[in-house]
Image 1 (cartoon, rainbow, N blue to C red):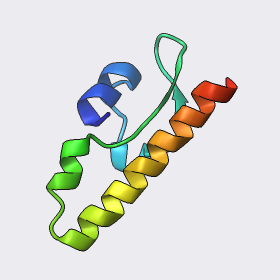
Image 2 (image 1 turned 30 degrees about the horizontal axis):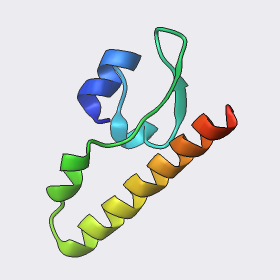
Image 3 (image 1 turned 180 degrees about the horizontal axis):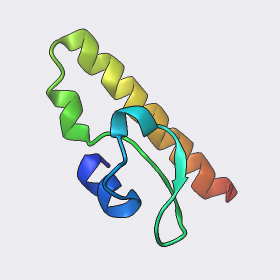
Image 4 (image 1 turned 90 degrees about the vertical axis):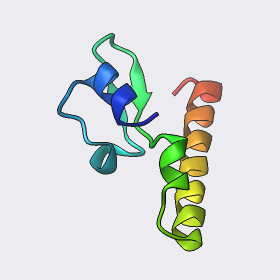
Length: 72
């Protein structure tokens, strides 16, 4: 979650903003989904942006959970 983790798993060229919500293959061969670090939501400029950020983050987590449950 976040740029540091994404770069560790996917390499220095990864952009969380551009890749968010996408499933990508890591250097270990595992699929990973890029998402923001939760702290970034708290730094949003206003309440509306925080709500939107949180909704997108929860949607990312739901997609990840679904893939784990269904195996694909």
